[in-house]
Image 1 (cartoon, one colour):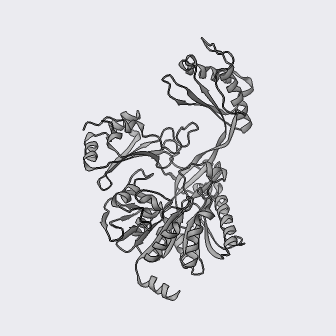
Image 2 (cartoon, each protein chain N blue to C red):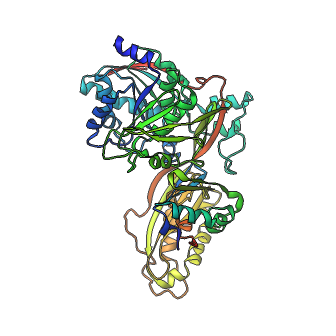
Image 3 (cartoon, each protein chain N blue to C red):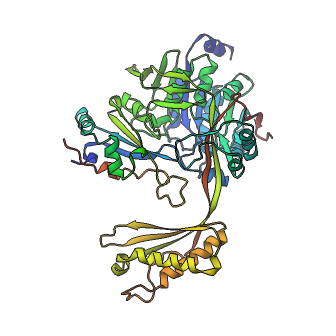
Length: 103
Length: 456
């Protein structure tokens, strides 16, 4: 199953000009737990999904009270890059949204 | 007025009604304001600065279209009619030019409405030369994000090449103005969003932890509700232990989930945030239902050196673009060599030798057999050069032969004439650094303004 089929929200946005943060919100405890168990937000997994070095994965967080999770990565190209194609960072969710989750 | 002041002095709670002033309020906002007034409102706050739209606005002096007067009218009216002090941050990028545009709009509104306002004004633009002087004087100005695109420490030379810069002022200069009873409100340019809420809370003796938490919960107004919508206001009451949040519009709920989700937005870390003078830590927060909302306790403030974020825009060049569509499969199959051919022709052209420019090609579309949209994107040291390069590059792309070509009357579809579209200056963040301050008001300029017709 793809992550986006388990989550109600998969969104990305800049967190400052040099970081992109991707938020996930789940409809119920079961989907939250399944995705947390899958390890998809671990550094190695994110680095592979986004084809970035591990050092560019800044951190991930799980918030049970919001049934939400977040991963933050270095934004390349950044807002300072002349040919950045996504100045808001609002369309960087695809690799994570299409990640396979074993449920 | 005296009875109201007594109530404030003897109650240790501060009630704020929050809006976002660059967003038009919902059409039924007056009804929401009435509901909030029934609960009691001590301050009306509307923040309106931010850098998520990037450095263009700071560098150019423009604002994305926003009618701040029309947006603020309903709640400024409520503030004046009910003698409630207000705090506004104005102008998106929030430099003097943006603040002045917004003040001019408020001035016209005051004339139209027959209002007289006496406001404290806090200007937070910092000149490149004074920033350079701070650096040269030994102030360590470290980058605010750990990015290799920012110098670890800002250098004086880099500061001098900035076009415009601002700092995110903390709550203290705003709180100082709240002590002046002759003022109807406080208006500031670029500011720390939560400072607008911390100032009134601290003015009434609440801790930085609670004051900061009030700010975190209210800074985006109705975005923290379910459904999230910054056009809706949010009401918050802070006391020495925590904050209660309520939605004045029954169609929008406040829930534990909506509040916790809001803390995620545009934040690298949902729980910890560095601010001037301390880190606000929300990781230990507890949520409890109340009859009309949700109460949140448990915010912590961990003291740290007093540093403010400085955002500085520098000019990167001037841009011109050309938009083109290609359906021809034979060309799509070799588009990389087609583009490389154009680059080689530009590199070989004597007329551009020694000039500074960059050429990009952006591609939109599904290469699996459909059409691709190409945007030729030229950034050069002058607008004229960007235009000239764009025409030259377009001609190479349009008429340049490629192996197997049958479409000898033109390689692409062009939707616009003129086909070279100058988009103007391009800016980047030349500074995104933290400046340690000797006093919270070290970099700001404070004055009093009477509207309509006042001069600073």
